[in-house]
Structure formats: structure tokens, C-alpha cells
Amino acid sequence: MLACKDLVVAYGDNVALHGVSMSVRPGETVALIGANGAGKTTLLHTISGLNEIVSGDILFEGASLAKCSSDRRVARGIAQAPEGRRIFPGLTVEENLSLATVSWRSWGESIAADFERVFDLFPRLKERRKQLGWSLSGGEQQMLAIGRALMARPRLLLLDEPSLGLAPRLAEEVYERVRLIAEAGLTILVVEQNTVLALAVADRAYVLETGRIVLEGTADELKNNSRVREAYLGR
Image (tube, rainbow, N blue to C red):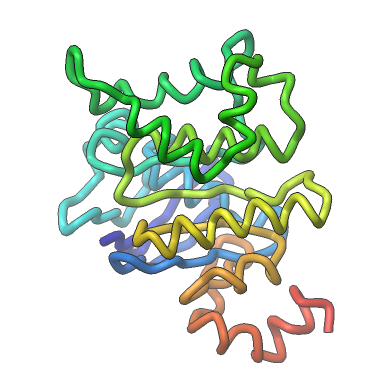
């Protein structure tokens, strides 16, 4: 479904991604793990169209995204729940969710079923649908960010650090919802520093260090890899 081929991305003279190649197959969950500053968010932003590519290419369902704007990528089926949640200030939960439907909604088409799917997954959002999004707890805001991405009806869901800033119990709750989304068949690419949580839901994973893929394999293979265990699993 998604293939990054020899991606090079730079911020001025600083090269952030050095020839990164990775793929995500339909229906699988892939984790991209690594330390802070490794280039994980840069890769997601590049897939979403927020960074220019120096060289290389990104293919989505066999077609190049090189000349595709970020809004067109959303319309083609790529949606991201960004790091830091980015909840729109001054808007209710319901309004935050409805904004994500502009990429596909035609005049008069109902979004009621989409709301219900999100509210079934995140019941607390339904309870707070008329509440301002910024007034939610951190965990609830993360649920809102993921729900907003789902409202775009993606075929590929990008999750950027969904456990960031959350207490362990809330992080596990968010990842339980990620697992349910994956079990429903949606393709997911998740960037995460919490390697334990990421590998618990992933089918495969890549390790990114200083802008380079240094390891890849199934989640079980990486869980049992001595380098990963020492550097990212704390054992």
C-alpha cells in the first residue's frame, strides 16, 4: 500500500532522512521506533506532504505522491493524528471531528454513521461531544485526535506518538483502541518512542536512528533482538 523509496529529506543543510526505504502492506500495522530526534516525525510529515523531498519517492497504492499536495493525500486516503494532538481551539469535540470530513463529504451527505463509529470506539467523546476540545484531558484529546483522523475515512492511518505525555494507564487505553482499529482491518503506521506499546500492536517494525533505517523485522523478531532490548526495551 505504502512504499518509501530511498527518501532523502533535509532542513536547509541538515539532512534529516538519509535514503530511507520502508513499506506498509494493506491491512497491517507497522511501527516505526527510535529515540527522540531520530527522524520519525519527519518521515510521517513527508508521507503526509508537509516536507519536500530532496530525492527518492513515496508510492501510495502504486502511484507516486511526489507532486501530490497534502490535502490531496488526505483525499486519496492518508490521514494523520499528529504529535501533540493539535486540537482546534474554540471548537467542540463534535466540531473538531466534523472538520475532518471535508475531504470526502459531498453536499447533503450524512456523516451520522461516521460519528457513531468514532463514538463507539471512544465512548467518552460521545459524552463530551458538546464540550470544547481543548478542555478535555490529555488522554481524551489523544482519542479526539485519532477520532478526527478516522473521520477522514482513511485507508492508511498515521499515528505520531499517540502515548506522548500520557500516564501509563491512559497510554495503554489509547493503544487498546489502536488495536481495535487494526483488528477492524485499517492499515496503520505508528511512530512511537514507547517501544513496548508499539510492538504489542504491530505486525512489523522498523528502527530509525539518525535518519537511517538500521533494523527491520516482525514485531516478535525485534522484541527478541538484543540491540532493541538493550536500547529501547530497557533490558
